[in-house]
Image (cartoon, rainbow, N blue to C red; front, top):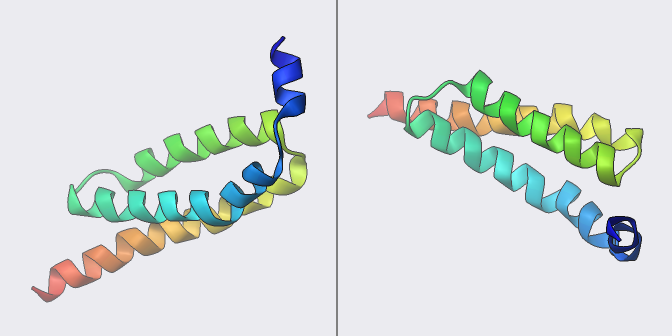
Length: 88
């Protein structure tokens, strides 16, 4: 039953999430982590783990390259908030 649902799912939504949704989520996570003074490494590690599980279920190994970009975007969000916090 679950296999039929996965096969019937349109993959264009997954690719849309790779290009738009995941980068925005990592950026927002970096921003919120900086605002709450949390551990950026721990929060991004959990998100990367979740992303890797998603990629293993829905895509091929070429999607693994996005992890580096997402991590950079997460660190960018964290760094921007820290930069502006120091200016105050």
